[in-house]
Amino acid sequence: MDATSFPPGGTAPPSPAPRSQPPWSFGAPARAPITEAPLRGEPRPGWTSALLEVDADWRGLAGRVATGAALSAVYGVALGAREGGSALLVHAIGVPAALLAVCTLGLPALFIVLALFDAPLSPIKAAGAAARGCASAGLVLAGLAPLVALYVVGSDTAGGAALAGGLGLCLGGLLGLRHLVSTMREALARSDSATKLLAGAAQLAFALFAIVLAWRIWVALLPLIGGAS
Amino acid sequence: MSDSKSGSSWTAPHPPSGTGTNANPNANPNPNPNVNASPNPNPHASPGTGTGTHPAFTAPPVEDDDASHPALGPIGLLLRNPGEVARRCLDEEDLRALTLASLAALILGAAVFGGVVGSFRGGVQIAYGATKVPLAMLAALVVCVPAFHAIAASLGRPWPLRTVIALTVTAAGRAALVLLAFAPVLWLAYDLGLGYHAAALAATLAYVVAGLAALGILLRGLGGAPHKLTTAAAFVMVFLAAAGQTGWMLRPYLVRPRTEEVPFVRAREGGFGDALVVSARSALGVYDRARDVASESVSSERALDDPTAPAQYEHPYSPPDGVYR
Figure 1: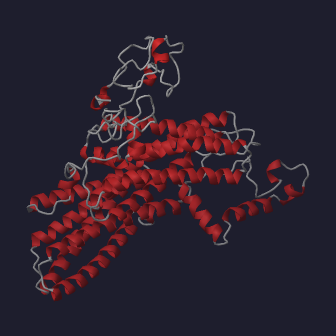
Figure 2: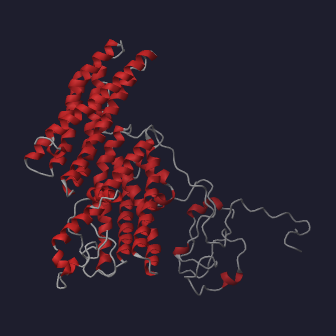
Figure 3: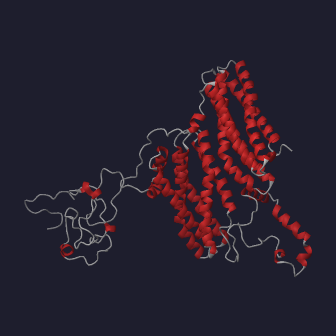
C-alpha cells in the first residue's frame, strides 16, 4: 500500500489544517504579514496648536504676538552667547524688534492696500494673520536657538558665526512670513478672482517689504550680524 | 493538531527535566516510539530534532489565525514595523518602553560602531570612539528636538513635545541598530587592510544607510498632511547641521594607525561651518589653509632650509600630528 491509498472500507484521514506547522518542527511558524494599527485619530495637539490659532479677540492676539516676540528673544540670547555679557541683552532685544516692526509698520499698510481693492478682510483677521506669523517665526527661532548657539559659540571666525546666525534668522523669518501670507490667503478665499490676483500682488510686495525691513533692522541692531558698531 | 488554536499559549507540559520529549499528545500525531520510550540523553538537544524540551526550545505557536503577528518587542518593532512605531509615537501609546528601548539601542549601536571605527588605529582609540559616537549622536538629538518641534508646528503639525521626542529617539534608535549591523562588516574590512580614505568612505556609507532607516520612521510619522516633504527636508537639514557640529567638536574618530598620541578631542579649530566654508573655497581653487601655511613657511624660510629646524617645517601641507579629519 502506497502512501496515498486508503485501507479497504476505510475513510480518508482528516486533512491537515491549512497553514499548520509540522508538529516535529521547532522552527518559527509561517508569519502573517506585519500590520500596523490605524491611527486612533489626529495626534493630540500640543501647546503650539493654541499659539498658532488664528481666531481670537484683540487681547488674545496681542498675547500671541508677545509670546512670539519672547520666543524669538531666546534666539537673540543664543546669538549673544558668542560675546556674552551685555551682548545677550542687545541681541535678545534686536531679534524680536524686526518681527514687531514688520507687524506694526507693514501690516497696516498691507491692510490699507487690500481695502483699496475691496478685499473681504476684516482688521481682526489681518491682525490674526500677523499674530500667527509672528508666533510662528518666534517659535521656529526659539527651536533653532540651541543649534545656532552651538555654531555661534563654536565658530572660529566672526563671519562663520554671522552666517550661522543669519541662516537661522532667514529660516525663522521666512516660515513666519509664510504663515502670515497663507493665513491671509485663506481669509481671502471667498473673494473673486480679480481681487485674489490683486491681493496676491499686494502680498508679494508686502513679503518683499517685510524681508528687507527685517533684515535692515537685524543688520542695524545685532552686532553679530554686523550692526550696532 | 486538533488544538491548533491553543498554539499561542502552548508550552511543554513537562518541566525541562522531563525524560520524554514532545510529550504533548496533540503536538505530535506520529510519535516516534524510540524517542518517547527512552530517557532523553541530551536535554539541550538542538531544535528540530524532536527532542528539545529545554525552555529555550519551547514549541512556538503551531497556528495562530487570530493574531496577525506574534508580539514584537520594541526592538523588533523598530526594525520590522516603522509604521507601527510612528503610530505609537503619534498616539502616545507605550511610549516609555519604546523610547527606553530605542535609547538603549542608540547607545549600544553607536558605541559598537564607534569602537569599530576607532579600531582602525586600535588601542585607546577604540574606547574613545565607543564613547564619542554615542555622545555626539545624543548631543545632536538634544539640539535637534526643539527645532523639530518648532518646524513641525510651523508646517502644520503642532504635536506635543513628547511626540516629537519619541519620534526622534525611535528614529535614532533604528539608525543605531543599522550601525550595529554594519559594525562587524566594517571591522572585517578594516582587518583586511582597508585604506584610510576607503575606511572613511565605508563609515560614511554606513551612516547614510542608517540615516535612511531613520527616515523611514520620520516619514511615516509625518503622515499625509501637507508639507510632508518640506518638513522632512527641514528635519534632515537640521539634523545634518547639528550632527555635523557635535561630531566636529568630538573629533577625531578615524585615526591613522601610525599616529602615536591620540587626544580624546582635538584642540579647538573652529566649527563645522568654518570647515565647510574652507572646503568650499578650496573647491573653487582658493586655498586659505595652504596660503596661511605657505605664508607661515615663507616667514620661516630659513627654518625650512635649516636641517636642524623643528619637524613641523618638514612639509607645510601635511597634518602636524598625522590625524586627518
